[in-house]
Length: 155
Image (cartoon, rainbow, N blue to C red):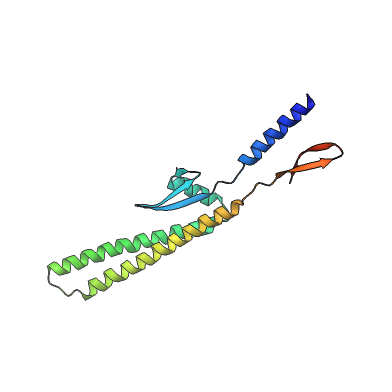
């Protein structure tokens, strides 16, 4: 009976240790920005933000990514305004040099900000995934000694 309880306990510990794996985050490009997944389940932006802000290894890169995205949004809106300026200048037969330079400049700077934001987001996710590690803090190892053969937890 004692052997049966021992085997049962070792079996339970083995099942628990195999299920204690880290859950990595994966990002895929989507039509309206990145889509985030964790274990084949889609995560919302709020869930990913919460996970990243709680992670010490990814928090700095994630915050930098959010600031750069805000900068990209500001320059994107400036690009929209300068594009409207180009169109109204076309309708009124005014010189187009200034509006075209403004539209090209704001568009270029906006793209640079969004690219840097995307790179920092990717770095944050990679840092988070690396911080998880690939294993648990313990493992089962086979033991053979004077007490018999079995499995032992090694920390």
